[in-house]
Length: 325
Ligand code: ACO
Image (cartoon, rainbow, N blue to C red; front, side):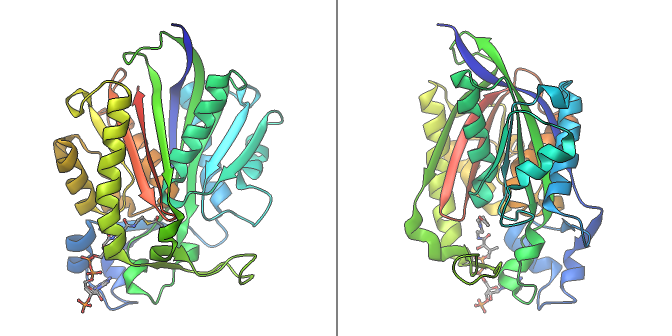
């Protein structure tokens, strides 16, 4: 049966110039390089310059993805950005990026699913493409997460960084088989009962401030490992595939131990898991497209490879997507 699928036609990324190492952080909070590396796997993170906005990071990543895909501003029908750190409360950062890119048609909006933001954005754009409403979409994960960190709280400030990643999706006629190129399926979940384990203590309606990230790390860790293994299995069984069919897992980059435990639970070798958190830390919605970009550019992910994407974060919101490149 012939169906429309979304093909990944291009990837892009942008990281702010300034790198902050664990040793740099040890000068401002009671922590050490040894503790951060051992507990999380993180060695450094990029931090946006004063005046450098989420829309700037997103625009740079989008430009590279568009060039990679060989598309121009006139081709883009839809822009979806996953972000928790928009430039302003409104309008959407996606609209600002639309103007920056010179895109004057179609529609643009943000989705808010914290660390699962890129996955939610990808799933949303995929539905518009599959319905036939959209031919070419830009999907971006972009964050200046450093702006919502409490830089006196060592439990959280050592874990995050800033960055952006983008993909161009193009509609393509496909056979409707699990051997097709493109997004095979997406699987989204949320459970608001766990809000107090990971949240920001402010917002326009509640405090009229932006607020800071608060997290019960141990509890989040426990939920992450079971929920992530569950959505990997869900994506594989929905397509009649097994973990042996996967070439790569591109997970949200929260913690090296979560990545290792999830890989083990689903029966994948750690060698096939793309890890960038040592260099980028947790960039929330940007972490998956940044990792995807890294592995495509360094030649590990090749055309035809089967890639499993998964994420879990604040909400809780979590999910997965299966993509043949
Ligand atoms: N440096 C030194 N010591 C620290 C630091 C630090 N930066 N942070 C905490 N500690 C201390 C704690 O105070 C505690 O001390 P105590 O034993 O005297 O009480 C000790 O280290 C151990 O703390 P734990 O919280 O038990 O450490 P854990 O091994 O659980 O690691 C971590 C903490 C890294 C946060 C881990 O739990 C984790 O990664 N959790 C999941 C994070 C995640 O996945 N988040 C989801 C995505 S984020 C999003 O959606 C926005």
